[in-house]
Length: 84
Ligand SMILES: [Zn+2]
Image (cartoon, rainbow, N blue to C red):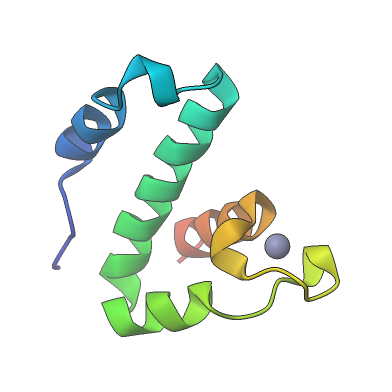
């Protein structure tokens, strides 16, 4: 299966984000989750489908926000991909 980046490389990318744009640890964890979700989703869907998913309206924000901007949507995607 094609993957955007291997997990190890993914973590290197996240950990290489400069300290001055890391506001706090929760954002870093979110970025890791986001990258991992993309990598996992890539295994299941095509990249195009992931982009379309990200551009869908988010139900958590009364459809004012897109899914790619919502940590809850990412968590749901991770769960969905994890459950196969
Ligand atoms: Zn959402």
